[in-house]
Image (cartoon, rainbow, N blue to C red; front, side, top):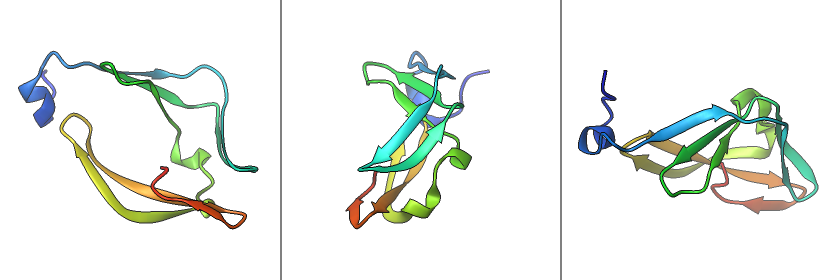
Length: 95
């Protein structure tokens, strides 16, 4: 069955591969660990660099607040973003 997403309807040859990532992923913001997972997934799409996705349960959400930023990908759909804050430092739209 073909993928119903609009991007795939226009470009059925486009490939997105998602596979389990081997190992532990630890994400730090400065000296603060903001996520750690042994269940990460690696997404590979076209000529883009690989991207790691972590389960929400492995992200320490107390360091994040939802931002107003949104984007749309015709292949993956809508995305919302989160900003991080820890030890007085902050960065917008990191997640």
